[in-house]
Image (tube, rainbow, N blue to C red):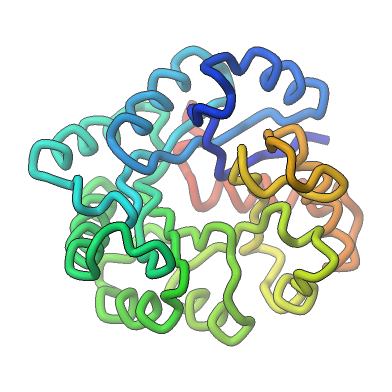
Amino acid sequence: MNFIDVHAHLSDPKYGGDISAVINNMKKANITRVINCGYDLPSSVAIAEMSEKYEGMYYCAGVHPDDAKTLTDGVYGEIKKLCLGEKCVAVGEIGFDFYWNKSTEEEQIKAFERQMELADSLSLPFVVHSRDASAKTQAFLKDRKSLINHGFLMHCYSESAESAKVYEDLGAYFSFGGVITFKNAKKGDIVKSIPLDRLLSETDCPYLSPEPYRGSVNDPSRIPIITAKIAEFKGISVEEAANAINQNAERLFYKLKCN
C-alpha cells in the first residue's frame, strides 16, 4: 500500500536544508510521491531543484497571496519557466488570504487572476489557498470559470460542506491534512460530504502535524495517519482510501503519470 502527499513544503527553513532524514522516514512509511508547493519565487526554485534530486518528488510553482505584491513581470516570467518543467504538476499555491493581509486585496486579485491564466495557458491545474476569504474565493472562481479547464485543488480545506459543493461544481478536488485528527476540529461531516473521488491527502508540512504529534515539525511520513482518518470518516478501509487518493491525484495532477 502506497501513499501520496499532495501538498508539502520541504524547502522550509525548519528542515535546516537537510531532508535526508525526512526522505528515510518517507520510505519507511511507503510515501512514494510528494508534491512540494511554492509560495514565492525562491521557494519555487528550491523545490524544482529538489524534484530533480529525488525520485517521486514533484512540485507546483507559484506565488502565495501573502507574497502577491512580489509578482512583478520578471517574477512572473521566472514562474512560467518553472511551470514548464517536466516535474511541475500545477501552478500554486495561489488565492486569497485576508487573515494576515500581507498584500493588498488589489495585489491579491491581480496575482490570483494572472496565475489562473498561466495555469490555463499551460493546461495545468492550480492549487488554491483560501483563508478568511470563502465568499470572495467562490465569487472570484465563478466569475473566471472559463479559466478552469484542468481542475484545481482546495488545499487544506477548511470551509463548509455547502461551499464544497460550489467548488466541486467548478471542478475542485479537496485535500485534508493533520487538522482532521484534532479532537476539536469536527471535520468528519465535511469529509463525509465530499465524494471519495475528489478527496486527497496532504501534510502542509512542516506545519499542522496530526495527533499524536501535534505541535511538532511535520513531514510526509505522517500521511498514513491522515489517510486512516479519512478512511474512518468515509467508512472504508485504509487501503481503499489510499488507492482512491492515489487515483484522484493522478487524475488531477495528470503529469504524475507521465514521469
